[in-house]
Length: 147
Length: 147
Image (cartoon, rainbow over all chains, first blue to last red; front, side, top):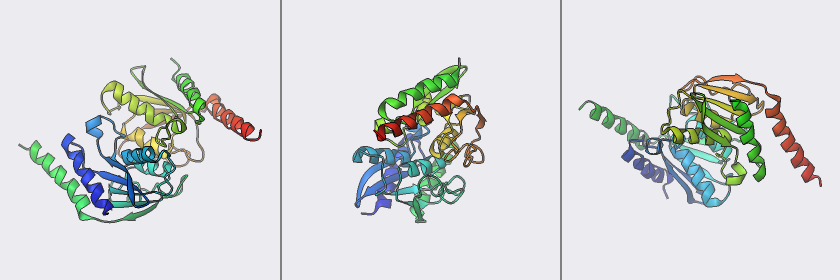
């Protein structure tokens, strides 16, 4: 299964409620155990980021917050809150679709995935679809604002 | 109202389910609008920290995640996930009961409250009750483990 594609499918769900399209999945033994998409505007909750929801969903599925055997895919590089959640849930490895040069906290701006209470390995996939879905979203917003 | 005392009262609730006693409150116009206590073990959710829950509770109370006019009290210095949440919810000022020298991300280990997408002012209160409630908790745990 293409896990990044699954995360992208989730990201597309964010758009309906005006949320920036970001998706994430948590995987154990090659199976998706947690899914999340950004729903900050939908829920009026600034913590309802894709990665946070995918982690909580995985913990619920597995009945534990010890996700040491899990890997994760996120379409966009996590912010510092989500990077913190990733180490709190002890994710083994994180694959990132595209960088967030300004606010990414997994290597682009700062790196929180190492040096604190857990180390999560990180790999950037530099997938153009993960950046395009976001730039297309903002293009549409600007077009609508100029109408 | 003594807001730190209110946060300490919340912290005491964590103990029943074996959670480290940490509490937090969010205040707007001198009224508590959000409350949280650490319930990671109770809920098997590594994101269920006191500060995170207090922020989500405040956003629900106020119907917005824009908490620019709010201040916050936490009995313990927030971890990086919660420091990230505090800037995502745009808290104006954070009062911290006691430092977390190892993992505190508001100045002790690193400082995430400035330099990212929002700056939250921070003040350490160095309240002995906030550290004692935690050290007493761990003393009790050790005593029980040695029985």
